[in-house]
Image 1 (tube, rainbow, N blue to C red):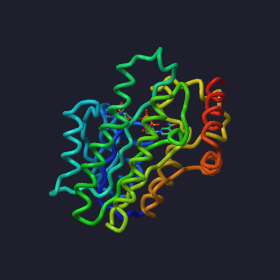
Image 2: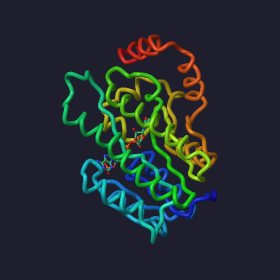
Image 3: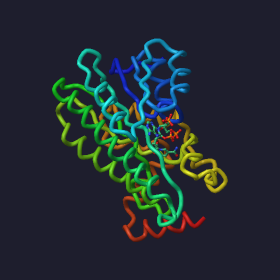
Image 4: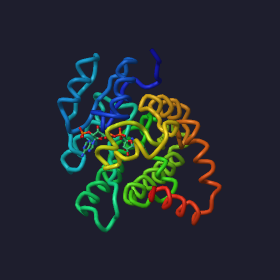
Length: 258
Ligand SMILES: NC(=O)c1ccc[n+]([C@@H]2O[C@H](COP(=O)([O-])OP(=O)(O)OC[C@H]3O[C@@H](n4cnc5c(N)ncnc54)[C@H](OP(=O)(O)O)[C@@H]3O)[C@@H](O)[C@H]2O)c1
């Protein structure tokens, strides 16, 4: 069992995928963990497997849901030391043909809810001079992604916001990190209509949720601004950063065309 410097955590999107793996890792290590999502049945199954897991059912697309989670993060009687903003989804398809209400929801969850909860986290942690904020972004944040255009744009926001907050928090005792996973086998593909990726992309490009969790936790503890799980994605990120913007965009467009 690993040991962690934080005694408590709150994870959004903990009912499946990366969030569930994070919840199981932390709860298994004895961290008092608040798990947040809409599917209460899924959250209850996780809570029953561990001591000290608190279930908070919330729809982060609603103001009520965002307020409830922000309030829990800000609690002074039961402080949260690590906040993981993980809930998010994507939408695959040609921008003009997609349901615009769904795209607005994507921005609301990936950008607005994450911003509100990051604010709640840092407002609670800064005065304490101690805390950890981990925002789940994506390698899609490093270049545009035709047919996942809104998703890549929301994640570019998450990476940029988180890097700014990392610098604001420098020297305060509060750690702020964006984890940028590559393709990871979760329910994301079914939700985002990217099921074809399983056949389209070879096995070596896939990471597991557990690998993402291990790397992300190590990097937020080390107070790294950016965390990129997997050697293949670390190498890709270096290459992308050395590539001119127009070429990144063209390559991204060619990959999407399959
Ligand atoms: N899988 C990948 O390849 C990949 C790559 C890079 C980044 N990511 C990012 O990793 C994060 C986790 O995704 P995942 O891959 O683990 O996908 P996932 O298995 O689909 O998990 C998404 C989680 O978000 C929650 N969620 C969705 N809408 C919500 C809402 N309105 N309110 C509250 N919770 C909501 C879901 O719970 P409920 O449905 O129960 O509410 C679920 O627990 C996302 O931010 C995603 O963008 C994923």
